[in-house]
Image 1 (tube, one colour):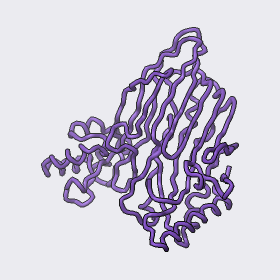
Image 2 (image 1 turned 180 degrees about the vertical axis):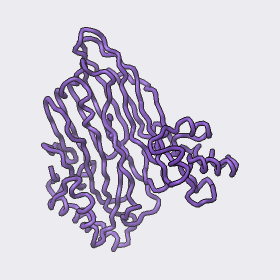
Image 3 (image 1 turned 60 degrees about the vertical axis):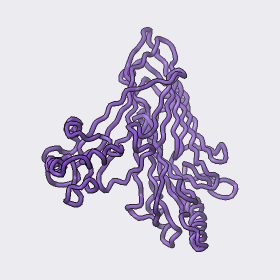
Image 4 (image 1 turned 90 degrees about the horizontal axis):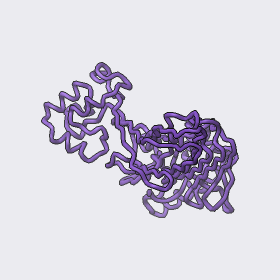
Length: 361
């Protein structure tokens, strides 16, 4: 699919078990350049440790740039109860000095607000957190902690939180003697951007990997309904309506989201609004491009295809522009678009971009 229209023009819409979306709060804005773009972090679906006798009879997805809701109906086709671990991997979160990631709830370990219900009852899954090396410099980190090394124990021995988005991150660094901060830089745990080992110049040389998991019993021959919800971590760019913006948008988003001429025409109208607003002295109004991804291909980790599959993408704003490469999508409401399949085997992940005119939020 290329793009979707409503009556007045183009309609808008919106990596192992989920999709993530984040709402950006921008204090100061300037037109989009490379450093004005926040990163898109992908999540996907539930992972089963044991799946040879468990089928997925139904999966229903609701995807927007602000919410992801997923409902599964599993069935144990064997003659014995099966107990297995079910996992929800969160997206990998980089903390480097050039990583521009905006998390929905940055001061929480559960930074996407993940919740899960089984047969209507809310459960409290366990959380497994790891710090994996992502060296920024060419010095100590690459020697001591090569790319992908598990640094979790070293980080905890240093007294640092793995999640550098927590408020305790800066306060912990500030409470350390300067000599200790310099030692952590030499050891390769921290990167010193300014060379003075001040708390503001230090960033982690790791990315955070979090997985929610729980033990689940699937009774013999019975269906089990699992529902989960979270806020996606979406990437955002913004444009002021400059003459070159349409070409930039086409080059940046065209191939990835199957953006065609109709879609570009809709975006042109939004850019015209932004340009007119700026000329009228209205500050803070831009065209925002929000990208969201959902890892769908993990749907192959149980027995057979998905019996009934339904996906709704909600662009949230009636005058927004949605573009996606998803096949067979049909408009079902002022802001919603739906795909339905039977005996479905996912071969591609879902990604979409939504363009809207307005203020951040």
